[in-house]
Amino acid sequence: MFSYLRSVIPINMNPVRVRFAPSPTGPLHIGGLRTALYNYLFARKNNGTFILRIEDTDQSRLVPGADEYIIDSLNWCRIPFDEGPGNEGGYEPYRQSERKNIYRQYAEKLVSAGHAYYAFDSADELEQMRKRLKDAGAKNQQYDSISRMQMKNSITLPEGDVKRRIDAGEPYVIRIKIPSGETVTFKDLIHGTVAIHTFDLDDKVIYKSDGMPTYHLANVVDDYLMKISHVIRGDEWLPSTPLHVLLYRFLGWEDAMPQFAHLPLILRPDGNGKLSKRDGDRLGFPVFPLTWKDPATGEVSEGFRARGYFPEAVMNFIAFLGWNPGTEQELFTREELIDAFSLDSVQKAGARFDNEKAKWFNQQYLHRKTDDELSRMLSPFLPEKKIHYSNDFLKNVCRLMKERVSFPHEIISHGDYFFSAPVISDLKAVEKKIKPGIKSLIEELVNRINRLTVFSSEEIDNMIKGFIAEKNINTAELLPVLRYFITGTSGGPSVHEIMSVLGKNEAVNRLNTGLQLIILP
Ligand code: GLU
Image (cartoon, rainbow, N blue to C red):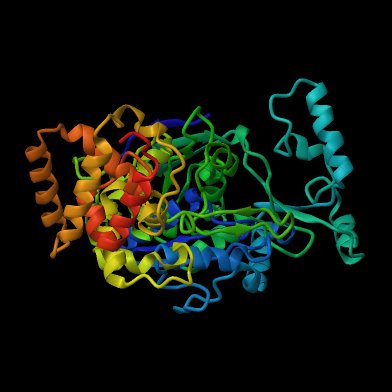
């Protein structure tokens, strides 16, 4: 359907004004967030303006709360808009439902100029038309330059009849009159030259019987009135762009037409389809920035925030879904992203979502947090809230655990032994280490631990090393047992580090509890 040629990106002399134009028909998906981010980065890079415009003309598809959700998500990810609802910048209002009165005149202008027409066909009649075309083996079963001649519209009906119907309040829509036998060509900054024959376009409704414009008309009118210089949006809108190009031409706005950049699809981790919420549910990862409760079904979908993702990690991760700087660098601050970003290096091919990579990014950002920052994030996850954990204790836990986790809450779940003694009921896990003599060795070690005056990890480490050397035993014979008694597991930070954080009393208690399970002398 399309032919593509990579083009040289023309330098646009107008001030850069870009917009993110979501429809509040549900929560913002990671793809929408990426579109917002790329618009934001492009605006910042070019000293431009980033606009949020809410496209809510399709009243039947509006979902309560989606509008606020979009704004909250942008705020959480720190993708601030310069103009938008609540942040007027001279082109308000920024919600299309509040601009309702603007669009009619443009639809009428198109009708007067012969580029659009009134159509009175009922749903039934449209269905019959499609069936007729299908039965006749037509390639396109659509309302177009051929089929329109058999339908009830202001092209086929006498003028007087049209007027009478309108005056009588008969419902009608306004359709664009797609010219026949033409090729519409435009440059896309990512796809190159795109050309489509008008045979493949249909006479889309641009104004509905409910007095609202459709997406196509409202989008073009607003981009023009808001002086948008670049339209950066998802690939799913590429097939609609020839229609938009025709609208610019028919409205006499060709000189002010923005440049287009269509961003690659975000693909599911397995297979070639577009990433959906279902994939997230199926494979266990979020696709929304914030938790969303579906107002119709009550179903709750956890977002990146609730899963413990940092907004800066999400921003960095989604920046790479379709773009890369052409270097090895992966971790980017916001300023670095702004500096490195260009539409020129956005790829055409779909970008595969990789949950492991998302986690990796989060882990990298977690490692870079200070122990103090992390300790302050732990409070919602702390077990037994009644117990007061000192900030120093939490900081120490963070220091030992942060290299081993990807999310703040994992510091608690993977390091649960810092917060309560493990419940050990048998010695199966260390069975092979329980040899004659081990009990008395550990008893003696506990005595030495008890005698330590400074309970630092270094002192404990030196003491244990000295003990092992003196007794001429193998580290691997003793340490796993100590670790098991202290933590109930076989992994984690060094035992002497854990013991020093737990404190002498707690460490000794745990070792004594473990010792009781050893029956051998
Ligand atoms: N309202 C459209 C959407 O939700 C906007 C498309 C565009 O940016 O033109 O995706």
